[in-house]
Image (cartoon, rainbow, N blue to C red; front, side, top):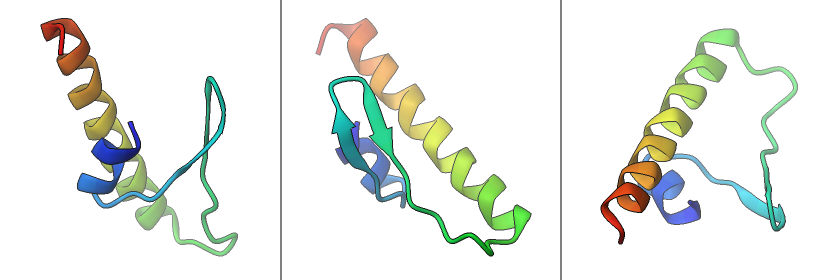
Length: 55
């Protein structure tokens, strides 16, 4: 997941076996936050696709 996120421009950390940690700015404009979530969604879709393919 970390590699897929990084490939989509998102930096995240592992905070536990089932936890991903984000540390966005507290004064981030909503448009930037929406864009970030779109990148995260794309990364999740890529990972799920790989899992479904058995890779």
